[in-house]
Length: 203
Image (cartoon, rainbow, N blue to C red; front, side):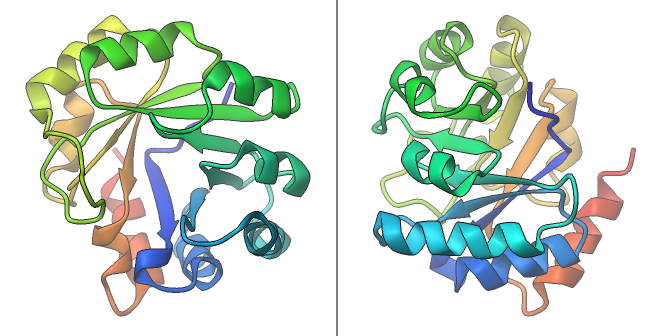
């Protein structure tokens, strides 16, 4: 079972080099970082994850987006899968027993399916409108997020347009963690912004 911190930080290639972004996120106090680099191949991604694992703090968690094979070879904490990626049941065959699987969901039905699949946490969103992802699913809002949190047993990571101002309302819905991309990475000093988030979520 994964230990989800309140802040689930994502190092997304859309904002720069994922390795350097991950370093800034960890420097700012993040304890979990997902490496998201969709435009590259397995070889480059493995090298990037290897590099991140070398400087990641002790007991920090590194999640690989989309690629269970890369997560397995690199020895990452686990993988995060989208609806179009390998099903969790097949990803589980690739990973070791102690590696974790997260799954993105956008509807109540998808979340309930993920709750019965061999996943360790369920990402739900977009909660609010987001510009980070092209062709994003429809916004679910706080009420639907609350419904999902009440109906699933596994930890929920809320994602999509979440800011410092809206984070507490998201947690009130029952989410265990909030995934943040643009509100961390769009700032000139990512480490400082991460510190702001970590302090804000100390409640």
